[in-house]
Length: 589
Ligand code: ASP
Image (cartoon, rainbow, N blue to C red; front, top):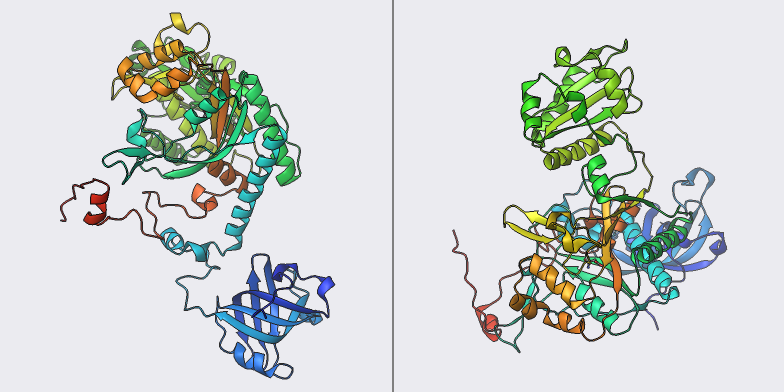
């Protein structure tokens, strides 16, 4: 015989169970002892129901209920009855009913917990150390449930679209950006290492060489990067690849996927196609490659407004080929100290200072440099910014184009957030296209691929300078966050060779690292393209969470530490020997 039964979930009790016997299981959420009657809110994944222990009708259960404490795990049987009219709790879906308990089984006793699942102010370290308690909170259940629903719907979509779900290896090969890979030693091959994949990129390309045509995978990826606030060393990608496609095929498919998910998850129509923008325009107007399209206040080039300026600090910038960029804020009544605050913010962001001009109620100009502004300033500014008028303010920053525009991009986002310019509850998708193929890293004095070195260049690249070459790459952005990206790949060994050469890989290095791919490219390799979506970030946006850690069951800390299992750990010397490893230990201080 079973020790206990469950006939209904706590949150699923309805009139259908009224006056009927039920068996329930769950956690003691709260216990209130009124001497005569004891009330317990019983909680399981579905919600709460009130239990009543009555000494008259069930003396044994009532006596046992004295021992109950928060988070005990119990099973009960009893009868569902309506609550007395004054006792109905309209905040609770089951608030009209209660269960008159007939029998109680305590399945597990709990000590006093380090924190209650009801606490909302728990330190994140505690939450991660006792993640199983943290995850008992309804909001965490909702996040994980939504994640499951999205992944299920995505699978359904891809299977309907004739994709095959194929797993690719976790133990794989150390590749060029080796410094960012986790290495895995093996007892079988002492002194040699596998690497954990940063993405299934090369395998999915090889799957196209295998004639698979349409592949997808919900893939775990690993990056041993310097820690950053909202990064995880392991994360999940929704990864796909298709043969014989061009950019528009991948983009159309993804838009249909998102529309399908919106229907499934929110029962809403998502307008497609999404907006599209080139990388150059995104940078010129938003100061980054992932514009938040939920609000305007774009960056404008104000350099022409200061062509003949007498202001020496601006002269100095313009003489060096620098530019002046500005943002217009309409109908703002900043006080001087608020403007000073934004000035300080610009300096914190690395700028020389904030140049501001306010258009007063009467149309006259107010600015620390007002007397140096030409009399035609307002008219000229109206050519640059639309909607300029009384109570408008222009925030301008001067300097070298790239850093200045990056700064203005950050300033725009900070203004958007602090002035409440970003409407809540909106989802604004955008495709950014025509990325540069390569970027120059001042530190290493090397060119590298902006996406990855398997990305195909756009036509005309053979005759262009490295910095001018464009990639057949696309990123999908949601509310200013890069959800994912992909590209049309190189499918020709010579072109791939050339790209490796341009990023400084010698023939021998390329052969050693990617010989298998170069060879595959000479053995029947179809044109192909694909993309990967960052699942954690996507779910974070859908749930309105502040961090990806809120949508991952067992995340690591920002410094990549697992507080729950306490990992990574030191491995005993004996075990290291099995792997042929010897570790240089840091001296204890
Ligand atoms: N593998 C790429 C990434 O992880 C995505 C792609 O190009 O499909 O970013």
